[in-house]
Structure formats: structure tokens, C-alpha cells
Amino acid sequence: MSPTETWTLFAAMGLVTLALRASFVLLQERLSFAPIVRRALTYVPPAVLAAIVAPALFSSGAASLGPVDARLPAALVALAVAWRTKSVLATLGAGMTLLWALTAVAARVG
Amino acid sequence: MTFSRSAFLSGFRDVAPMMLGVAPFGMITGVSAASVGLSPLEAIGMSVLVFAGASQLAAIALIGQGAGVAVILLTTFMVNLRMAMYSASLAPWLRPLSAPARTGLAYLMTDQAYAFSILRFRREPGTPRRDYYLGVAAPLWLLWQVATALGAVAGAQVPPSWQLDFAIPLTFLALLAPAVRDRPGLLAAVVGGGLALALRGLPFNLGLVVGSLLGIAAGTVAERWWAPAPPPVRTEDRAR
Image (cartoon, rainbow over all chains, first blue to last red):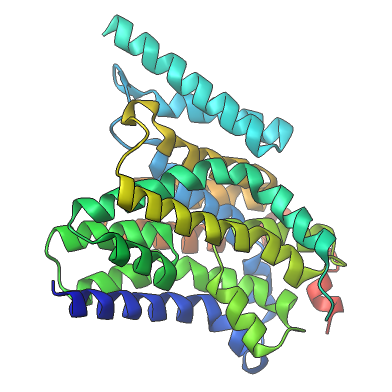
């Protein structure tokens, strides 16, 4: 890819992304939300956040504990911490600590 | 409109812990860009023009495979389609702002800026919204630019054995927990996450889009079954 093509591609990617981001925020005067749409928007955060996070928990590359990826148990504990504390730092601390511990154990056992 | 420093700082305080996850992600993106032959200047330009990590990483991978421009743009559209949903969700809250201001805020939109803002606006509708949003979004923008530039220039600084990329799903888990407020919300999360997981082999990150849309649909339908109580008055309604 030539430098010109590369920069054109990045500019086009930027326009596509900005169009998606600005879509409803800019056109809202011309769009009226039906009640069902406004109800549906309530469920955007849980559905999308879960859809982003779920596949990432099973990504390869982490230490394998037999059939179980070390990331999954670490994530489940982190989710419990997130639920209890609502704290990002506590969630990060618990998840990373457990991941490192499980990885160390797997390295010793394996 | 006067600038509310306290709202900006409040947003900054909320997003600060997320930076632990964003910094390595940005550096990984910069390192990946370098690995497929993009110059540091090109990597920086991509981050400024696009400013959307997952789609940048996807595009970098596709450039490495020699994919065409059309495929890369379609992938960008698919991976960032959720931004249109965020846009629709935030639109009623940003309505009082001018079109240029809304465009500027839209450019800064991220998963984090959306999630923190919508949670805060619902909890405290009186929040100075532009400045809270900026407090979340602007520091992330700056960090993203610095981190991708560092990654592109210096290469991998942190050994992969630290697995710092795991900080990204962890931060999203921390946001997911308070976003699930009732049983339909839980169903939306289970359906969205389950389908995205089951369909993660689909190209263009379509699993994310399909899972999200069906999760939203599941929550909306379930609300009819589970919530006979009168719906709470939302500020979106009151604002009209």
C-alpha cells in the first residue's frame, strides 16, 4: 500500500467512524424515538458490554489449565468483585492477581 | 455555557482507573502498526483520524494480510457499529448542545465515555453533561495518542508474559456490573455475551453486532413479561 493509499484509507476510516458516532447525536431533531426504541436503548449498555467482554475471556494465548483457560476463572472472580464493589480498580486488581497466580501455577504444574 | 471544572474533574476521576487498561492496549496497537510496516507517523495519523482501538487493530491486521480498502472499510463500519447505538442512547442527553459541540463530543466517543456518561446522566441528571463527558473522553483521547505513538516508536516495552491486555476485558467487566440493573438487563447481558461468544468465529466482528442487537431485543421483550410495575419516569421524557 502506497503512502497516499494508506492516508486515504485512514481518512475514510475516520469518516466512517465519525459518521457512526455523530449519527443520532446530530440528527436527533429529525428522528423521533418510538417508545419501544427508547425502551430498547435501556438495554444497550448491558448487551453491548457483555458482547464485547465475553469473547475476550476465551481468547487464546493465556496459560492453559488443561481445557480451562486461566482467563476464565480470573474473569469470573473479577466479575464477582465488580458486582460487589462497583470498583474498576478492585476488579482489575483481583482479575490480574488471579491471572498471574493461575499462570504461575500452570507453569509449575505443566 | 460556562465550563464546569468540577464536572470535568469528576469525569476524569471516574475514568482514571480505566487508563491502566487503555495504555497497554494503545501501546499494543502501536506495536502492531509497526509490525505490519506502518511508519510511526502513519500509526499516529491513524490514531488521530480514527480514534477507535478495536477497529484500528482490525485494520492493522487486514493491512498486514494485504486486504483491499473496501474490506477494511466494511470492517471498520462493523466493528464501530455499536457507536451508532451509543449515539442514539446519548442523543437525548446532549440535545441542548450546539451541532459543532455535539460533533466534537461524537468524535471523542468511546466505550468508556459512553458507559460512564450514560450511568452518570441517569443517576444525576443535573450533571453538567458536556464537561463530565469531556472529563472522561478527553484524557482517554490524549492517552490513546501518546500510547499508540510510544508503541509505534519504541515497540513492545512490556513483556507479553505480563498479559496486560487482560486489563481490557477486566475494565469492561467492571462497567458491565453496574449496567445490569434488573432482570431484563441481566437477560440482555447473557444473550448479548453468549451470542457474541458463540459467533466469535464470524468475520468482520459480526458476532459482536448480532449478539448486541439480539441482547437488546431480548431485554426489551423480557421487560414486558417481567416488569408489570409502571415504568419509572426518565429524565429523557421530562426534558421534552
